[in-house]
Image (cartoon, rainbow, N blue to C red; front, side):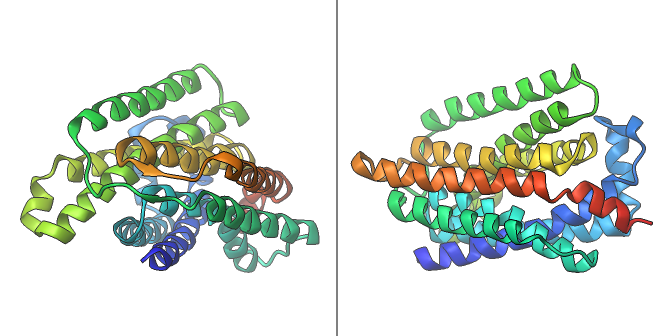
Length: 290
Protein backbone atom coordinates (compact mmCIF):
# COMPACT_ATOMS: atom_id res chain seq x y z
CA UNK A 1 0.00 0.00 0.00
CA UNK A 2 2.85 2.42 0.77
CA UNK A 3 4.36 1.68 -2.64
CA UNK A 4 1.02 2.50 -4.25
CA UNK A 5 0.88 5.71 -2.21
CA UNK A 6 4.26 6.82 -3.56
CA UNK A 7 3.34 5.78 -7.13
CA UNK A 8 0.09 7.75 -7.12
CA UNK A 9 1.84 10.73 -5.53
CA UNK A 10 4.48 10.68 -8.30
CA UNK A 11 1.73 10.58 -10.94
CA UNK A 12 0.04 13.47 -9.18
CA UNK A 13 3.25 15.50 -9.09
CA UNK A 14 3.81 14.97 -12.82
CA UNK A 15 0.23 15.90 -13.65
CA UNK A 16 0.32 18.97 -11.42
CA UNK A 17 3.62 20.03 -13.00
CA UNK A 18 1.98 19.91 -16.42
CA UNK A 19 -0.83 22.08 -15.12
CA UNK A 20 1.62 24.58 -13.61
CA UNK A 21 3.52 24.99 -16.87
CA UNK A 22 0.33 25.53 -18.88
CA UNK A 23 -1.13 27.93 -16.29
CA UNK A 24 2.08 29.95 -16.23
CA UNK A 25 1.90 30.24 -20.01
CA UNK A 26 -1.67 31.53 -19.71
CA UNK A 27 -0.82 33.91 -16.86
CA UNK A 28 1.71 35.73 -19.03
CA UNK A 29 -1.09 36.70 -21.42
CA UNK A 30 -3.20 38.37 -18.73
CA UNK A 31 -2.99 42.14 -18.12
CA UNK A 32 -1.13 42.99 -14.87
CA UNK A 33 -4.08 45.09 -13.71
CA UNK A 34 -6.15 41.93 -13.26
CA UNK A 35 -3.99 40.70 -10.36
CA UNK A 36 -5.90 39.78 -7.18
CA UNK A 37 -9.23 40.23 -9.02
CA UNK A 38 -11.82 37.68 -10.07
CA UNK A 39 -11.31 39.10 -13.56
CA UNK A 40 -8.02 37.18 -13.62
CA UNK A 41 -9.86 33.83 -13.59
CA UNK A 42 -12.36 35.11 -16.18
CA UNK A 43 -9.52 36.00 -18.54
CA UNK A 44 -7.88 32.63 -17.90
CA UNK A 45 -11.03 30.65 -18.74
CA UNK A 46 -11.05 32.09 -22.26
CA UNK A 47 -7.63 30.55 -22.98
CA UNK A 48 -7.48 26.96 -24.20
CA UNK A 49 -4.02 26.48 -22.72
CA UNK A 50 -5.38 27.37 -19.27
CA UNK A 51 -8.26 24.92 -19.66
CA UNK A 52 -5.77 22.18 -20.53
CA UNK A 53 -3.81 23.14 -17.45
CA UNK A 54 -6.91 22.84 -15.28
CA UNK A 55 -7.57 19.38 -16.72
CA UNK A 56 -4.05 18.40 -15.71
CA UNK A 57 -4.64 19.81 -12.22
CA UNK A 58 -7.90 17.81 -11.98
CA UNK A 59 -5.98 14.67 -12.89
CA UNK A 60 -3.44 15.52 -10.22
CA UNK A 61 -6.27 15.82 -7.67
CA UNK A 62 -7.48 12.32 -8.58
CA UNK A 63 -3.99 10.85 -8.18
CA UNK A 64 -3.58 12.79 -4.94
CA UNK A 65 -6.81 11.34 -3.54
CA UNK A 66 -5.65 7.83 -4.41
CA UNK A 67 -2.30 8.49 -2.73
CA UNK A 68 -3.99 9.80 0.41
CA UNK A 69 -6.30 6.77 0.63
CA UNK A 70 -3.42 4.31 0.30
CA UNK A 71 -0.93 6.03 2.62
CA UNK A 72 -0.34 8.69 5.27
CA UNK A 73 -0.50 12.41 4.52
CA UNK A 74 3.06 12.80 5.81
CA UNK A 75 4.27 10.44 3.06
CA UNK A 76 2.04 11.40 0.12
CA UNK A 77 2.37 15.20 0.16
CA UNK A 78 6.17 15.53 0.48
CA UNK A 79 6.52 13.53 -2.76
CA UNK A 80 4.94 16.53 -4.50
CA UNK A 81 8.22 18.44 -4.12
CA UNK A 82 9.20 16.60 -7.30
CA UNK A 83 6.68 18.76 -9.14
CA UNK A 84 9.45 21.30 -9.88
CA UNK A 85 11.80 18.85 -11.66
CA UNK A 86 8.81 17.42 -13.50
CA UNK A 87 7.78 20.94 -14.56
CA UNK A 88 11.24 21.63 -15.95
CA UNK A 89 11.41 18.30 -17.76
CA UNK A 90 7.99 18.94 -19.28
CA UNK A 91 8.74 22.53 -20.26
CA UNK A 92 12.11 21.89 -21.91
CA UNK A 93 11.00 19.67 -24.84
CA UNK A 94 7.81 21.69 -25.37
CA UNK A 95 9.83 24.90 -25.73
CA UNK A 96 12.79 23.24 -27.48
CA UNK A 97 15.20 24.08 -24.65
CA UNK A 98 17.92 22.11 -22.89
CA UNK A 99 19.00 21.96 -19.29
CA UNK A 100 22.58 22.61 -18.19
CA UNK A 101 24.45 19.67 -16.59
CA UNK A 102 24.31 21.46 -13.23
CA UNK A 103 20.52 21.43 -13.53
CA UNK A 104 20.50 17.65 -13.81
CA UNK A 105 22.72 17.46 -10.73
CA UNK A 106 20.17 19.58 -8.85
CA UNK A 107 17.37 17.26 -9.98
CA UNK A 108 19.40 14.30 -8.69
CA UNK A 109 19.93 16.07 -5.37
CA UNK A 110 16.17 16.60 -5.00
CA UNK A 111 15.35 12.97 -5.78
CA UNK A 112 18.07 11.52 -3.53
CA UNK A 113 17.31 14.03 -0.78
CA UNK A 114 13.62 13.17 -0.82
CA UNK A 115 14.39 9.44 -0.74
CA UNK A 116 16.79 9.94 2.17
CA UNK A 117 14.40 12.14 4.13
CA UNK A 118 11.34 9.93 3.68
CA UNK A 119 13.32 6.70 4.10
CA UNK A 120 14.75 7.98 7.38
CA UNK A 121 11.48 9.46 8.64
CA UNK A 122 9.42 6.40 7.61
CA UNK A 123 6.05 8.21 7.97
CA UNK A 124 3.30 5.89 9.06
CA UNK A 125 0.61 5.08 11.55
CA UNK A 126 -2.17 7.49 12.25
CA UNK A 127 -5.92 7.27 11.73
CA UNK A 128 -8.10 7.58 8.64
CA UNK A 129 -10.36 10.12 10.35
CA UNK A 130 -9.83 12.76 13.02
CA UNK A 131 -12.08 14.35 15.66
CA UNK A 132 -13.29 17.93 15.33
CA UNK A 133 -11.11 18.94 18.27
CA UNK A 134 -8.07 18.41 16.04
CA UNK A 135 -9.58 20.02 12.97
CA UNK A 136 -10.59 23.33 14.54
CA UNK A 137 -7.11 24.53 15.64
CA UNK A 138 -5.52 23.21 12.44
CA UNK A 139 -7.98 25.01 10.17
CA UNK A 140 -7.66 28.19 12.25
CA UNK A 141 -3.85 28.12 12.11
CA UNK A 142 -3.59 27.41 8.38
CA UNK A 143 -6.41 29.82 7.54
CA UNK A 144 -4.65 32.50 9.56
CA UNK A 145 -1.41 31.85 7.66
CA UNK A 146 -3.18 32.17 4.30
CA UNK A 147 -4.86 35.42 5.37
CA UNK A 148 -1.56 36.83 6.65
CA UNK A 149 0.34 36.06 3.44
CA UNK A 150 -2.40 37.62 1.30
CA UNK A 151 -2.51 40.74 3.51
CA UNK A 152 1.27 41.18 3.32
CA UNK A 153 1.30 40.60 -0.45
CA UNK A 154 -1.24 43.38 -0.98
CA UNK A 155 1.24 45.85 0.50
CA UNK A 156 3.78 45.03 -2.17
CA UNK A 157 3.89 45.66 -5.89
CA UNK A 158 4.40 42.82 -8.34
CA UNK A 159 7.78 41.22 -7.84
CA UNK A 160 9.68 38.48 -6.04
CA UNK A 161 8.38 39.28 -2.53
CA UNK A 162 4.75 39.27 -3.61
CA UNK A 163 5.17 36.10 -5.65
CA UNK A 164 6.84 34.33 -2.70
CA UNK A 165 4.15 35.41 -0.24
CA UNK A 166 1.33 34.29 -2.52
CA UNK A 167 3.23 31.06 -3.22
CA UNK A 168 3.39 30.36 0.51
CA UNK A 169 -0.33 31.12 0.83
CA UNK A 170 -1.07 28.73 -2.02
CA UNK A 171 1.13 26.09 -0.34
CA UNK A 172 -0.79 26.41 2.93
CA UNK A 173 -4.13 26.16 1.13
CA UNK A 174 -2.84 23.13 -0.83
CA UNK A 175 -1.76 21.39 2.36
CA UNK A 176 -5.14 21.96 4.04
CA UNK A 177 -6.86 20.79 0.86
CA UNK A 178 -4.90 17.54 1.00
CA UNK A 179 -5.71 17.03 4.69
CA UNK A 180 -9.44 17.46 4.05
CA UNK A 181 -9.28 15.40 0.86
CA UNK A 182 -7.77 12.49 2.79
CA UNK A 183 -10.73 12.47 5.18
CA UNK A 184 -13.31 12.85 2.39
CA UNK A 185 -11.68 10.18 0.20
CA UNK A 186 -11.62 7.69 3.07
CA UNK A 187 -15.26 8.49 3.81
CA UNK A 188 -16.13 7.70 0.19
CA UNK A 189 -14.06 4.51 0.26
CA UNK A 190 -15.58 3.24 3.52
CA UNK A 191 -19.16 4.51 3.42
CA UNK A 192 -20.04 5.46 -0.14
CA UNK A 193 -21.17 8.53 -2.04
CA UNK A 194 -23.94 9.51 0.39
CA UNK A 195 -21.57 9.84 3.34
CA UNK A 196 -19.03 11.57 1.10
CA UNK A 197 -21.55 14.26 0.12
CA UNK A 198 -22.64 14.67 3.75
CA UNK A 199 -19.11 15.19 5.10
CA UNK A 200 -18.06 18.80 5.72
CA UNK A 201 -14.51 17.96 4.64
CA UNK A 202 -15.80 17.36 1.09
CA UNK A 203 -16.91 20.97 0.75
CA UNK A 204 -13.95 22.17 2.76
CA UNK A 205 -11.38 20.76 0.34
CA UNK A 206 -13.30 22.23 -2.62
CA UNK A 207 -13.18 25.72 -1.08
CA UNK A 208 -9.54 25.34 -0.08
CA UNK A 209 -8.65 23.96 -3.50
CA UNK A 210 -10.24 26.90 -5.31
CA UNK A 211 -8.44 29.27 -2.96
CA UNK A 212 -5.13 27.55 -3.67
CA UNK A 213 -5.67 27.81 -7.44
CA UNK A 214 -6.57 31.51 -7.17
CA UNK A 215 -3.48 32.27 -5.08
CA UNK A 216 -1.28 30.21 -7.41
CA UNK A 217 -2.53 32.11 -10.47
CA UNK A 218 -1.73 35.42 -8.77
CA UNK A 219 1.65 34.16 -7.58
CA UNK A 220 2.63 33.11 -11.09
CA UNK A 221 1.49 36.44 -12.48
CA UNK A 222 3.16 38.55 -9.76
CA UNK A 223 6.70 37.32 -10.38
CA UNK A 224 8.94 34.62 -11.75
CA UNK A 225 8.72 30.99 -10.77
CA UNK A 226 12.14 31.45 -9.18
CA UNK A 227 10.41 33.48 -6.47
CA UNK A 228 7.18 31.51 -6.04
CA UNK A 229 8.23 27.87 -6.50
CA UNK A 230 10.49 27.39 -3.43
CA UNK A 231 7.78 28.76 -1.13
CA UNK A 232 5.13 26.68 -2.89
CA UNK A 233 7.13 23.45 -3.00
CA UNK A 234 8.78 23.46 0.42
CA UNK A 235 5.81 25.12 2.14
CA UNK A 236 3.35 22.49 0.92
CA UNK A 237 5.58 19.62 2.07
CA UNK A 238 6.35 21.14 5.48
CA UNK A 239 2.78 22.18 6.32
CA UNK A 240 1.39 18.84 5.10
CA UNK A 241 3.83 17.01 7.36
CA UNK A 242 2.71 19.13 10.32
CA UNK A 243 -0.97 18.50 9.54
CA UNK A 244 -0.38 14.76 9.21
CA UNK A 245 1.26 14.64 12.63
CA UNK A 246 -1.30 16.86 14.38
CA UNK A 247 -4.61 15.96 12.71
CA UNK A 248 -4.16 12.28 11.89
CA UNK A 249 -1.67 11.42 14.65
CA UNK A 250 0.82 10.08 12.11
CA UNK A 251 4.39 9.61 13.27
CA UNK A 252 7.94 9.83 11.97
CA UNK A 253 11.19 8.50 13.37
CA UNK A 254 13.03 10.69 15.84
CA UNK A 255 16.29 10.33 17.74
CA UNK A 256 19.39 9.87 15.60
CA UNK A 257 17.14 9.52 12.53
CA UNK A 258 16.67 13.29 12.65
CA UNK A 259 20.20 13.80 11.27
CA UNK A 260 19.70 11.98 7.93
CA UNK A 261 16.22 13.50 7.74
CA UNK A 262 17.69 17.01 7.95
CA UNK A 263 20.42 16.14 5.45
CA UNK A 264 17.75 14.92 3.03
CA UNK A 265 15.70 18.10 3.55
CA UNK A 266 18.82 20.20 2.91
CA UNK A 267 19.43 18.40 -0.40
CA UNK A 268 15.80 18.94 -1.43
CA UNK A 269 15.87 22.61 -0.43
CA UNK A 270 19.20 23.23 -2.17
CA UNK A 271 18.03 21.54 -5.37
CA UNK A 272 14.74 23.45 -5.29
CA UNK A 273 16.39 26.86 -4.91
CA UNK A 274 19.02 26.09 -7.54
CA UNK A 275 16.53 24.90 -10.14
CA UNK A 276 14.23 27.84 -9.47
CA UNK A 277 17.08 30.30 -9.94
CA UNK A 278 19.02 28.59 -12.72
CA UNK A 279 16.16 27.79 -15.07
CA UNK A 280 13.76 30.71 -15.45
CA UNK A 281 10.46 29.31 -16.66
CA UNK A 282 9.19 32.87 -16.84
CA UNK A 283 11.58 33.75 -19.65
CA UNK A 284 11.23 30.39 -21.40
CA UNK A 285 7.44 30.44 -21.40
CA UNK A 286 7.38 34.07 -22.47
CA UNK A 287 9.59 33.16 -25.45
CA UNK A 288 7.19 30.35 -26.30
CA UNK A 289 4.33 32.83 -26.67
CA UNK A 290 5.95 34.64 -29.61
